[in-house]
Length: 312
Image (cartoon, rainbow, N blue to C red; front, side, top):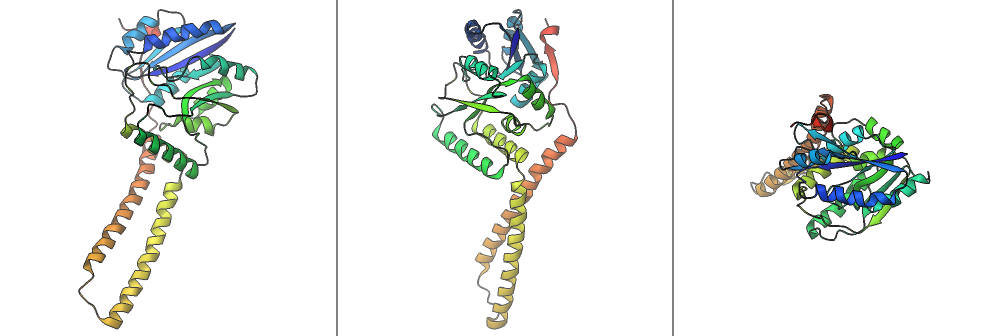
């Protein structure tokens, strides 16, 4: 009998976790000769998420992992993939924005052996603030221009993968993770399923605009060195411009003397060049900070508890 593992990262999801479990039970009848395991990963939740996981783990098809603190969704997904034992592994959100009903179609596609992964992407952003949608689309355009790794617009973390592809993803053990890029980078044949955006069944999103902005920076630094090249080109360009300006000032002084006027423009130029220098230093600092975190070789996550050693 084949097995499908469902990896479900959770952070303060007490309102939806049981609803999610009930929905999975409903779709099980559509699968013949297939067993399921649901791996909930508690990413340092501060509500009753862990308590509910303990209750659900009384069922044979539920396992859970609880972190010692909040390590982030990327760490939670990696931990779930490591713990999975299924022939096929899916990553899903507990809020039902990833429709469980799609799992049957995804499974059938992989059974045909034409693909190694079935991924999902949203074709609409219904329910999202207009500004957030604008910046999201802008981000995908930028990242695909400056990175050799394709990041599909509207791509979700929701996907079903073969064991071979999961093992390949687990080989990428970098601390600063961006899974959408990693899934693309490891290769394999991927089929994309499109669906309209679905709002959360309950609760509130944990992704603020600021968190999404930092996450986008993480992906750019992880999968592109173009910002470093831009910083270098800007440095060369401004050195050339400065050289031209110096010659111009010398010639003007020799021909017309040294008038006292012009200090506002000089101050503006100084501020502009100083800003560019700080921008370039900031870009370099981002890459340096990621390198610093990688060389420390810290674990991606730390487990405090699993279903095997529940704390009573």
